[in-house]
Image (cartoon, rainbow, N blue to C red; front, side, top):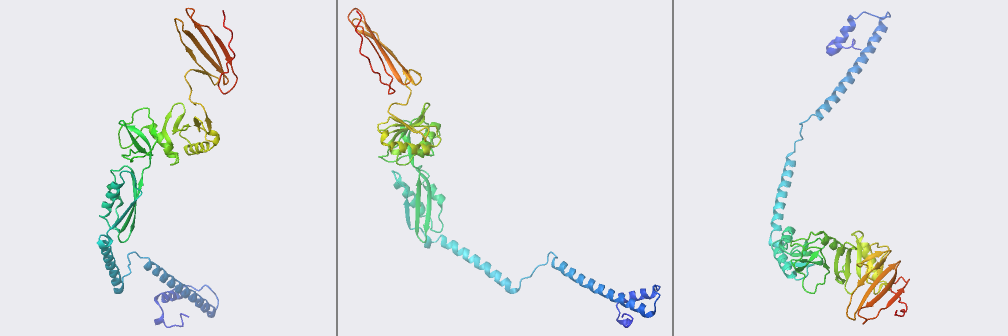
Length: 387
């Protein structure tokens, strides 16, 4: 097919291939028709390869141009004008907001303070109201409000809610006083975190926290014994705090508290305090515990109430019993008496002997024993005096 076309219309590559075929030796021994047919077939294959190579090069060149870095899409004049308009609008709106935020259109004219009570309530309201009037409902500074009442330790935090355009509500979160501690010879109320509160007003009834050593003055109590007692009181319900007269700890029973006109409460260590207070409430509500001298909730699952003192008396104890000895001497007709008591397994036995000097007294011996677990001694009839 290349031979049938004029040479002027052939491309340089086609002319080069045509020259190479004409100079190459003939391999096939067939006639000219077969050779011409073979050359026509090869020319068609070359043309197909050339077309495929050209299209592939075009696709690659498009990819290279699309992936070339630094090529930017230029905005049209209409796009540039729209972008400039958006920027101007943002600046105008920001300026309008700043003007409205600090203008009299949003000034605070009505302030409501809630959650504050006690002797310092009026002063706290006045300080918060004065600070709020310097603000607007669109620009409330909570930090400035906290700074206005930092001199009042009873205030733990303030929470603010603004009502545009002119109303502001301030909720004061107060520290709840739990007990009193003797600081500098004066009973001072303290909160659960140990903060020393200045004044709680008259008529406040709080338990006194006993301490083994004087508590130094300061804004916060850090003594371990006081902090343990405060943790005990913090776990109690608010309704039971006024019923307590004392709280503290001792080496024998751990944490303890005293009810006003009621039993003493023993808690042991500082674990599971909420469960122990629930056990105390359950025992106090039981009619069978009426008249108990103490309630022991060291194990909240097995609370115990007793009519006697749970403290160990002075003397010697063996197998849960006590032994006490008292002696006295008298002369010139007085009596000398010795009491000896020994208890084993909850029973008591007592022996009393008396001797008189100068013939003016009498000698008497009484023995008695009991096996009751109540701890009382039943005395047997006395024996006749010896001559």
